[in-house]
Structures are given as structure tokens and as C-alpha cells.
Length: 240
Image (cartoon, rainbow, N blue to C red; front, side, top):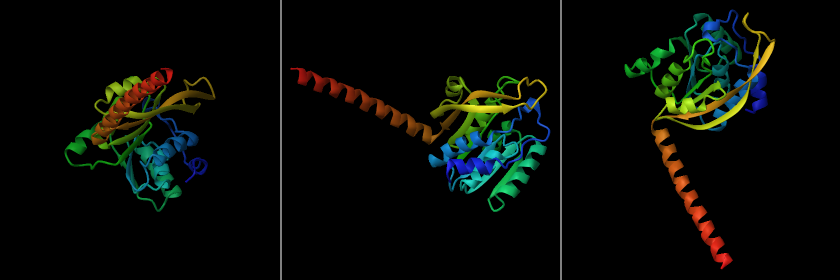
């Protein structure tokens, strides 16, 4: 599916009826959701795979993953009202997809996996709280994500990359790019009708995938050093 078509389809997703500021409940814009999901899709991390959506809200990312051919999608959220809205969006937008939603505190995910109550997924997608209301709100999401899957796609405030790289070790960030997140007036403390902030979309790998990435990166660096050395030698010979 092309990026533009995905964005058009996701425009139909309904948002929060009564968003909770303490949970930083902003509807993920359809254009950003499409860009985010299409990156994962083109990297081979969505189609025919099991995908978890942490902090799924009203389900726009879950629905998008299903539309892109995920084998199964499970959305997790602590807000029961948001779960009902997500189920409504999924039933209307992808009725034939294997997509379910679970009421769950994200902090419980690692324990549930350790105790065998929850199987791991192939990929985690998430737009976690940025920590605007309470610093560190994104940390439980990162901890749960690297525990639940070898590949994670996550949206964060611009400037978070260094912190994320340090916090998730030994997992690693393989890709990161900056894009725009338009936030419409949602709460009383918002002063503008729309504010555009820069965010970072990160691809994170853990476990064996992280080890493979580190090995490939080391080999690339060795090759680069060797190539630079050979280039210098060739230049020296030409100059003789």
C-alpha cells in the first residue's frame, strides 16, 4: 500500500472523546501515523508479523498495521474508554483483520512475559507519553518494548535520541529521523489552535537483532578504515 493511500484511510480514525491530560492523550495525526507505519512496513517489520501497539489509545497505529498486512495486531492501553474507541475504529476500518485490544498497565508487560502470560511479538509500535506532564513517563514503554519484541518503532520528542540510546542498552537504535507532529488544541492549557513540534521516530532492535547490528556495524567500520587506507595508498602511488 502506498503512503498517500494509507494516510487517507487513517484520516477516518476517530480520536478521544474526553482526552486525559495526565496520560498525554493526543490523537496521532493520520499523516504522521502513515509515515511512521510505512517506514516499518518498508523495512519488513509489519507484513505477515505479530505486532503490539503499546499505549494504543483509539487504535490508529493498530489499525494502520492491520491495513498494511500484519498477521495479528494487539493494542494495549490503561484507559478502558480508549480501548472501546479503538475496538470501534478497528471494527469499522478493518473488520476482517486479526486485531484485538487489551486493558493493561504497560509496566506489567515485562512481568507478564516472564511469567508466560503474554507471548512476545515480532514488532512493537508506539507513540508513548513524551513526559510533558510527568517526567519519565516514556521509560516504562521503552522497557516493555525491548522486552516484548526484537524490533520497536517509537515516537519521541526531538532531542531524545541520546537518552534513548543510553536507557535501552544493550538494545540499540538502528535508525532515527526527525519529522513534524501537529498538535491541535486539546486541553485548556493549550494557547494555540495548532502547534507543530519536531519529533524523532526511532527504530530500536534488541536481543539477537541488536548483536547482529553491532557486528555488522563493526565490520562496516573495519571495511571503512581499510578502504580509506587503500585509497590513501593508491593516491600515494599515483603521486610517485
